[in-house]
Length: 376
Image (cartoon, rainbow, N blue to C red; front, top):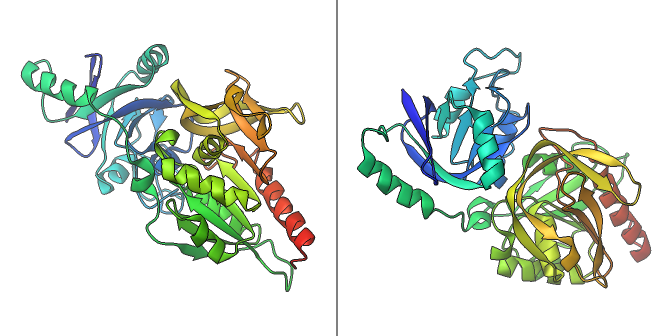
């Protein structure tokens, strides 16, 4: 079946349908990972977006039920150069096409994704649509109407749409000595990836995942040892009430660790500012330099907003990591709170695990505070 990608600037690219037929509108972005396409599709941080994969062959090792980063696909559409129809891997259960159909996602293949990526790099994130319902060249009136919809589209209410509705607790899966009490970590779900929970579980933590709108009073009632602030989608500045709540939570002195959107919301709570990037960082190959050690790590990232490090009050915290390519803020060490945050994904999945040690640092900080309090 013929399919068409229509960009907000009027560009029309023809291809073939993959996944479901129909029409979908979203922000067209690109992701540079060579692997991890299932993790990308099921990452809630892609809410409202149409993903372009820069690697030319997608789906070659298939899809399975174990590698889900959430319970569904959150992207609004999918663009690939070639969708593999004969995956080869012992863990493969279904093809990419079948996976997209299962979750009602509209996709297109046969597009020159390298050319599209260059367009997005030069012009920035651009709204667009994928349709199988008409030929834009043959029906200019329908094209004009769809372009108005494309140009008016905006991602809003992202955290409310992706956060869990009720708290849920996960027990540790390892990392405990005989008779050792598991640390209880509260995880504020702002659009959380499953692997954050798994990284804590395997280190001996009992994890309670909380809705993003959880209040400081509700958190205090749980009496957790530490607080994780998860990744998530959308414009961080939109979350005014959550930002206020995070500030009050951190004022209690609870040890905290923020990732991605959690990093951005913490910075906003501290008085810093964020801004939308031209085309963002999405993929598994972003270099990040740690000022404390001078080391540069290869990281997995997915964001289009960045903390403006220069706006962070010096009395509140300091920039601890920067992107080695564009020097944007990638981490903050806080002085007024017992907290550190990073823009990248130490839980990786899929991607490099160079920075997974940050979970160990977070738990060491919790144990240090517990010793001070005399908590066993």
